[in-house]
Amino acid sequence: MSEGVKEAAARHWDGVRPDDLPRRFWQVAGCIRAINAVMGAEGSGWAEGLMAQMRRRLGGRRLARGLSVGCGPGSKELALVQAGIVEGFDLYEISAVRVVQGRALWQGRGLADRGRFLSGDGLAALDDPAGYDLVYWDNALHHMPRTAEVLRRSLRALRPGGMLAVYEFVGPDRFQWSDEELTWARRVRGALPPRFFDPAAGARLAAGRGVARPTVEAMLALDPSEAMDSAAILPELRRLAPADAVWLLGGVVYALALNDVLANFRLPEDAALLDSLMLLDRALAGQGLNHYAAALVQRPA
Image 1 (cartoon, rainbow, N blue to C red):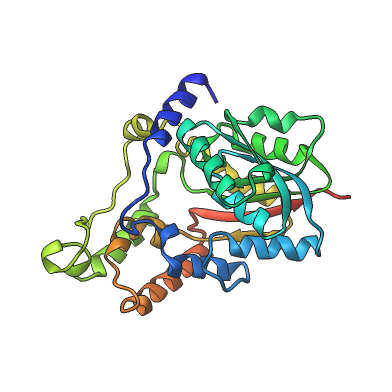
Image 2: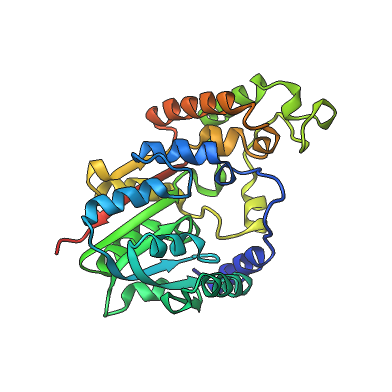
């Protein structure tokens, strides 16, 4: 990642604040529960499905040394430590604000000695001659250039018996949605009643019915690292991982069609509607429309 891109991305993430309303799918238990179910888990916690698959493949073995690049405040990695999957992490993050938040989070959980926060993009750590037992990519890889090469380097960074775990946005570069994806997203939004869009009809957050591709120029202005080479991730995961260790997680409905609109679902009253929409998303995933995927690759012992 170039220094200019890195600095612009760091400024963007320094300024990101938590949403007051659950506008995004990762804030909605019903969405996460359906995604976890694809990986054979019942919980509504982030990446519980992937963690369940990791435990199954590790057979009770705990990984010693983990690496996470673009970790944010490290909450996802903290969950892996608390679950007993990995002993500790080297945690790289370009946002100084998030490094401070992360250190406070791990300190507050009494695990500061298990998470070593480092400022920087962390890609050079993939060449650490000591190697790692776990390389974990969770919605940071799609901010990297040359993602297929980064995945190959991640695999080479593993010690014998180590594991590469990936949970990522794998959709179109720079969010340049296909015509088919836009058609489905517009159909979903068009079918919802006014109370999902209009505050006068009961919406908590005003939202438009339209769904459009952002311009590349707008994407570059917001965060030049966003989805710069995301479309290359899934083909490389399919090349590296066994077929039964790649999970297609959809996203055209829950991440694109329902973006922002999720804030206007009244739960539990709208739970059945949300469940139905997640079933539609699952069907679209089976047709090859996937914005998210997960995968596990183990290096032979």
